[in-house]
Picture 1 (cartoon, rainbow, N blue to C red):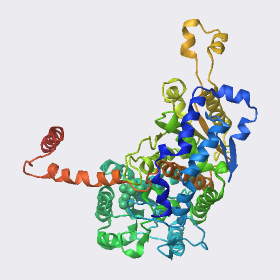
Picture 2: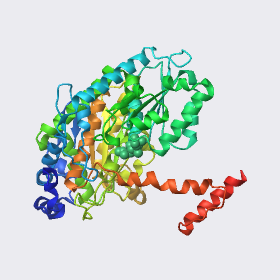
Picture 3: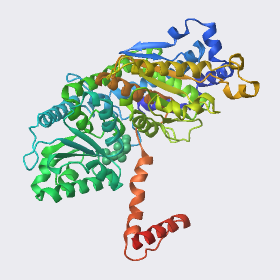
Picture 4: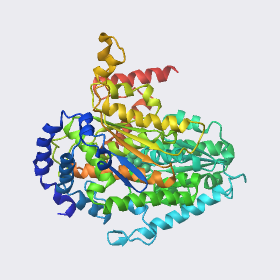
Length: 550
Ligand code: G6Q
């Protein structure tokens, strides 16, 4: 049995540290953050950490020194360190797919050595990065010409899930650093509207499609890729145009070549890169074209710095470990169902969507590595919107609802678009929200404001709502890399404690086969013999009826 799997022989709920935490919970359950802060003037300092340019304030959490000590003991006893070492050394910790998990190799420096089945994979990683850079520079310098001799000005990434969310999030996040003369679009949905709306104002002669698909078999991506092919050929009317207007990012050379893309225009990656961990691989080609190879490398350096921090910092000073432990605390001991991620930066508008896949596809599992049904809650629901917009909608529930919703507030001290007092107003809201959520407003305070008695309960805020505040100087490629890696490794920490496989996605695989059975039933000329349940059969018949009448 490998080192990585030894640690799950004792179920989580039977571990001594877990039981101690359960007992400790009783003493903390009703303690208010007002009391914790009032009793300890040094609290903000003690429960905060600065590393790699990120300031992580976790003092507004319902924890004491003892909570932290016990949570750290859970991490130790659950073998987080052993699993981390197993991951970094290329062990096949994705046990259900029998694969290594080495997104950390994608951002390892050129001279590093990381072995998979005895082979150092870092040189291959850099070989692909170099090819990507050469290609990106050609496009950025208007040297890659379309079939009719016009420079490519539009880049459309076609991919879905892990082959879309990273690229679109990174493009939006780093748009400030992008080449503004070029247009970037991202098509993912099999709904034709996505393709049509993304291309309606583009000239095929100036447009390059990147078909991003690890497997090169995904229904949505292949459908959109064929539509794109037709869109190009309808205008350019020559198969030879494909070579100038399509490149592929995939592990499936055969599939790429069958589609008609020259494998010379293919950028590869490896089975040890999970889709949701692939934005640093060739899947990031659109990002590299947008921001240029140098800034892409700065982003990779940010990822790598967080990898090293995760691997080497003691757990009590380890950002991802602390963040993961806080998540576990609310998820498993307070019954919190969700975590809200609230970036106070418009450029991070797709960050919550990206994190939804990272966190929920990784830790939305109900069996342990051994295949036993878990006896505890696993991954929470992640969701969110950029601030301050959310404040005018769903924050009501966070402040005064009956559900406990821990929040991550993310802010930057310097705006990329300094304009009047916008930034001060933005950041004042970050601090004010965290303060209000923690301390609330007592009935006495509300009364003292002259509120009539009957209105007092409505205007009272209980507080004791936990938040983490993450503050950095400025949103840069390097900081983005650090932020994403912070969440990646926090997810890892949680998954290791829950003894689940954070790197498979059987639920997603199911979706890839389900619809295939129904498609012919929607398309057949003859009335098909339907053998689903009565609900599905009726829905299919109804669709066929409307389709026939149109
Ligand atoms: C990610 C998942 C999933 C995957 C997509 C696209 O971890 O596996 O989101 O990225 O289904 O798959 P392809 O890249 O193979 O098209």
